[in-house]
Length: 349
Ligand SMILES: Nc1nc2c(ncn2[C@@H]2O[C@H](COP(=O)(O)OP(=O)(O)OP(=O)(O)O)[C@@H](O)[C@H]2O)c(=O)[nH]1
Ligand SMILES: [Mg+2]
Ligand SMILES: [Zn+2]
Image (tube, rainbow, N blue to C red; front, side, top):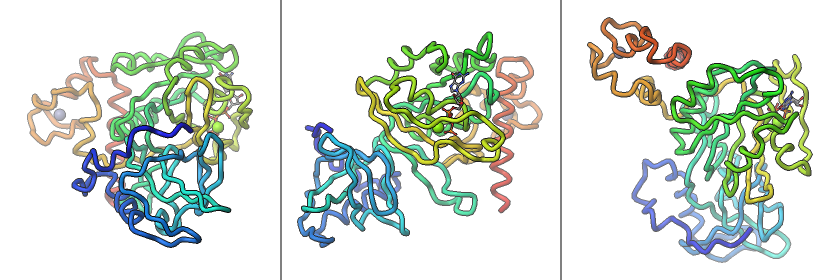
């Protein structure tokens, strides 16, 4: 990977003042790694304005697989970057690597430009799990058929992208299986979201997808079996990633891709392939905020009778009226109701 001319943004952005910021967690680590530490044969100090020289492809607890010095390399992770037995590094992280003879060590992580997060688990719903960093584009991969197009997950991913400061693109794959794209995709176009239609079988739409990904770091997310890994293979056949037919075992939660990993393709395209998911929790979104993530609700809430209107059942609700009048799409509104309901249920634990 080419060394960046630009210095780390740590100082420029004044991270240390922003304790509530999503990156304060990293900053603490970062500052800790700025003091002299002795780990293995390392004794040197890391300058505060270190230049990241490596890119995280994937990792285990103690080892990171990196793009470093123009190659893919395994490096040890400094214990300062480990928390609760697991590293804080995620694919897409820009890191500072130091060569210590036999082993190269990841010593520090640069502040993240953007993050994709979800609640760590149902049990640990108060902790954030960041699963990719420095992403430019979130490609929400869906299938036109097999498995059927499901708007619910798309709506959730759109919120995750919004929260993470990432541009979403909706990719409707397996277009060879249908006459025309599912009608729902039009709503997303109406909302200003880029919608692409692709087929790994016929190659349709792949040039457009490639153009959109050039020079960017993207994440491919979506249900299992929609063709995320197949799309990567279609863009760059040498990758030869494992893909598998959608089957009942897939429905039961068996995924073909089992870990999140970054791939470097030609033309400056970098893609993080992720395992398919069944449902997606929303991090940092409250029921009160939820309407803000539905741009089509716009300023309507100002016209609701109640100031704290939840837009679910209230009399004289301007949002409900707009749904009735067909100005807000019913399925998108249903998504809103389902998200609210699941958030309310979570609160009961
Ligand atoms: N007809 C058709 N089949 C496709 C297309 N893209 C992928 N497939 C098939 O769909 C199945 C699932 O593809 P994968 O690429 O493994 O799906 P995935 O989204 O990576 O799945 P996970 O790794 O489990 O999340 C495979 O049998 C592919 O051959 C397409 O455009 N058209
Ligand atoms: Mg896959
Ligand atoms: Zn209302």
